[in-house]
Image (cartoon, rainbow, N blue to C red; front, side, top):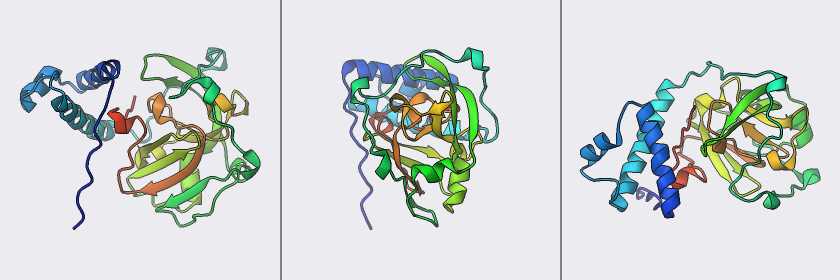
Length: 254
């Protein structure tokens, strides 16, 4: 029997730890619990180093389960009018704007793997030929700001059906050409507003916002909306994510 993989150790700077505690506090309050109640249940306080990590990891997983139970697979996020679009739309990434990757578009291929029948890679032209849908929705960042933008692209559900994905699988994961990675639950992947965006503001997706392909989900926090996607995979094994593996709540629904 193989050993159970070790949970990654969270190494955070003091400011990052404070931000994470604040995020978890908001999630706990939304769920009707308090940090004091959690501390009594665990027998520790939020000053205890490793114990803090254990509490936050446990509560993050608990929040994932609660949010997935509450998630409405067909309930739509609010949409907006064209005159409500935020201009300029804000850049957001885990790196500065001057480090936006340069993508070799003529050789770009979207890799597909995991629990799918058709594992052939997709060109950008093939993606553009699939049915497209447009939305004007709000992106909400975990840092406390939001912006309304117009997005157009392929419904992720349509793409998953095209590649013969197992739609009963638990997760859809994304690997990106800026070394970012993330994953979502299958219910969110099949949500009618979850798209693989190719356009922004009526034009091809600009590099700052994820060219040539990004995930757009108005039902999730901004960091879940992976940019510069180079690979998609379907799995039943928990894939984690760049920020999620550092302690951020994985489901992160709004």
